[in-house]
Length: 125
Image (cartoon, rainbow, N blue to C red):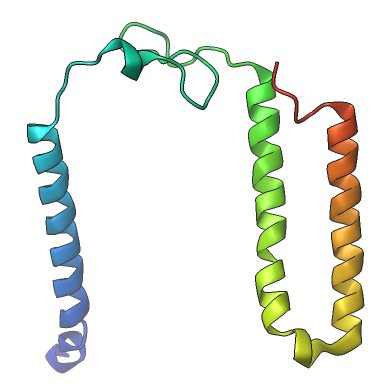
């Protein structure tokens, strides 16, 4: 029984080192970092809405639906583009059938992207 568990020792050592390093780096960052926000830090950056402090504001505040639409569309297209990498690696093995099926997939993806573009789903108001 002990011999079976000894094979897990390197994994436990690795996990212990990873957790210890993560806690150490976060602690050093928190101790050495400035905790006082300034106006540039509180200004809108890429998300499009003003920064807020959770203790003063309600965490269940409402966001514009456009934020969710753009984020979901980004995730959908990002995940679909991930399919191109394994397809490109296996292109010689899958032959013309794999090539034609991927072209159909990419054409459907392009049609969906053009539809969303024409509907204005990608416009930020």
